[in-house]
Every structure is written in C-alpha cells, then in structure tokens.
Length: 314
Image (cartoon, rainbow, N blue to C red; front, side, top):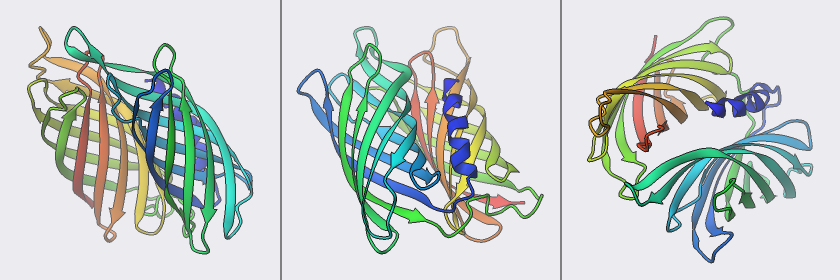
C-alpha cells in the first residue's frame, strides 16, 4: 500500500533526539472550493520539531459531510516554523502528501469508496501560554486530482510534551516486550447509511525496536446489512512515547478477511488496514488501548472499527 510512503518521512520525527512533541485537536468549517457547499472539519495532529525552525507532522483529517462526499484521510507534512518562545506567537507553513478515503455517491449501489493521494498545504498560527498549552488556528487546502478540492478553517488547542526522550517507555536496554490485548467496540461501514455492528479483537504486539512495533490481530467486525467479516491482520507500527504513561502510534498492514456474505462468489479478500492508537500504561504489566482502524477495500466495503481494550505484557 502506498501509505507506506508516509512512514519513512515520519521515522525521523519518531526517532529524533529532541524531547518536545506537540499534540493538537482542531475543529472548524470546510468549504468545497468549486461550490458554495459547507460542512464541518476536524483534525488530530502529532508534530515533532526538527531543529529550531522545522518540524514533521502526522495528521488525521476529517473533511466532514458535504452532500456527495464523505472524505477523510492521513497526511504527513514537513513544516517551516518561526522560532518558538516560552510564551507568545509563532507561525508555520506546511506541505505534504494526503492519502484520502472518500465515500462518494453512486447510481449503482448508492455509494462507492474511492482512495487516492492529494497534496495538502497548511498555514497556522499558535499562541503559546507560559505552561505547555497553546491555542492554534490553521487553514488547509486539499487538491485531489479530478475530485472536489476543499479548504478547512480550524481552531483548537494543543499541548507540548517534553518530559521523556520519546523512545519506547517499556524497553530497557536490549529487552523486548510482548503484549496481548483484548478489545471491543463498534464497526461503522463507510456508506451513506453508516451501518453499525459490534466489533471484537485480540491483538498480539511485539516491540521490535525503540520506535517500532509489529502486531498480529484477529478482528471480528460483526454483521450488518452490507458486511459480515472477520479475519487476521498483520501491521507494522511507528510508536512514540509522550510521557511516562502515554504512547501514540500509527500502524499499516494487510488484513485477510473471510465470510464476505454480500460479495458474489467470494468468501475471502485481502484488504488494507490503517490504524492510529493511544496506549496508556497503568503499571509495568497492564496497558489500556484506544484505537481507530480503517479497513481499506477494493470492492466498496470500507469500514471504521473503533476499539477500546485492556492488554497484559508478558
């Protein structure tokens, strides 16, 4: 999957020696550039400084619900920023690739799932408070080839974590960690009806390096009018510690799904699986995990799987 092109750009940010890491949550309004149509927009971003005037970021962007398109995706961007002061105003401009998932209206089945790449350009201004908190406003432009371009105007807040180096907080020297996590949650089909069902998973996670994990997951998506899937996924992850308890990570891999009751003459399918997870270490052995998982198909049965679970290290 071409999403792996984003990962090498972000590996420097995950492995950089500097401790500071920014996490921000923004929301606002979206405009479809070639019409007067408006909708909401929201973004969750992780950014890491590279020197005093540059940064790398990873962003999940939801472009809202215009009439004929429900689009979201993941972007990796490089930034030029003014020097940050302990308090006061700073500015930044960023650009990078955006891999999108678009649920578009179709006369055949009512909708279809499109995937593709688009450039994304951003400008932002941040006001830094004496604490690690900051307020932020940001504008993004997304230009997919042959599809509706959009502009988002966002406002929100962020927090700078600068207490730990950022490497895997549960690695000591050359030791590794294995974790078994059981999760439950909800599957939402990426259609205009958003059919829902209960989801369950069992995940085995192996720490391969200070910033790299590997997982094997059994996933049961449940049954809706459009899907009835379960299967096994394998993913590679980039993981970054924010403090002594919390980790963020992004995983990309393959998902072998079975029991496709709504697809003619097919009982199995190889799909993609893209995930973003937050992990909280209650103590050395127990960890909580919250994850968003996007099943990426080529037969118009994409789905979001939202999971909350508890894991045990061994």
